[in-house]
Amino acid sequence: MGNGSAPNIGRVSVLLQWNAEDPPDAFEERRNDLIQTQFQGNRNPFIDNPAWADDIWG
Image 1 (tube, rainbow, N blue to C red):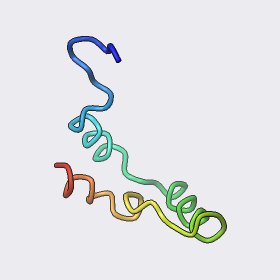
Image 2 (cartoon, one colour; image 1 turned 60 degrees about the vertical axis):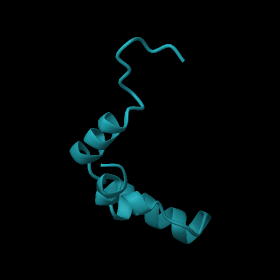
Image 3 (tube, rainbow, N blue to C red; image 1 turned 90 degrees about the horizontal axis):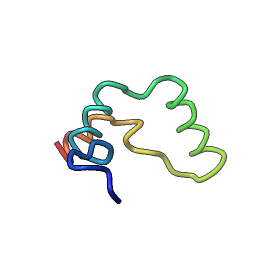
Image 4 (tube, one colour; image 1 turned 135 degrees about the horizontal axis):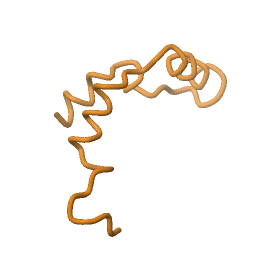
């Protein structure tokens, strides 16, 4: 994939910055609840614990 000499999207540092700047809102938390209870039976742990991204990859 040629995204130039200074790739931005997909860099861990950029993803962690986005994670810090845009924490899950009420809509995303409700959607996570709905997915667990009515569809997949599982949750996105990074919606419940956004700090885990930094703990794992930071």
